[in-house]
Image (tube, rainbow, N blue to C red; front, side):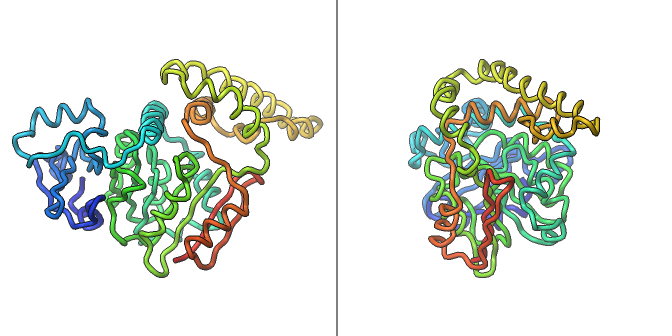
Length: 354
């Protein structure tokens, strides 16, 4: 944890400022590797483990890393509550565990992700991010955090799952990137951001609109927010057939078993993509290439197809939204200059200003 992060953090419970206690630094002596953040008002304690503030109740932090931390430092921290769950629902925990496994297994970065990011946030350009303070809400393994930082922003990547460890590793080259673990319904931030983005996250929450409203509460007048959501339009096969059948089974599978099972749909994507490249390379057969399914995956390596199959089949909750739903979200949040645009008629971008 960089000391500069402290000015952005507040107690997620009472919203009071936090104090910092350092135990150890990284090898370069620049970042706090272990320590804790404490709230004087409500006496809450939040450990810093592996350089990441864990802004969660103790009993929902990964038990392996927490046990190691407490074995070394329990005598140095004030008394804390082990059984305070802060309203942490079982469904949120299942989602966190699923994404924690997913984004630590599929944590590699590919050059194609940059084009992917720019397509998500279109029509925003790289220059938009220069000198902005950005919150990446639901950063996963940090791929969007990485590009926002590359374009000149100071970025806080925030996620509920243990994917934050992969995000920290992927973004380690940037001096102005901070990674935080916490709960979107109990945000540990003050009103400090010029721009908040949430890409592919809200539709997996138990209550997506509530999560969106929590992010809006962090905006000051003139600040902007962006969210990307699954669209209901154009997804009949997924929303009716797959959600109503195969996903009822796959979401209950052990994560390791599901990982291997997902080689099957990934191989289907990949095989179809090989046909796409073959047909697309010949002027006479390009028309056939254009009607093949899964061609949106053709530019990605097999590992990305495997990760996306796991993402769809393993995530406990998927929610889908119409354009009218997105308009309602923006209206309820009292956003100005709202722009709602689609990506290939299958998903929605919501832009708005406080």
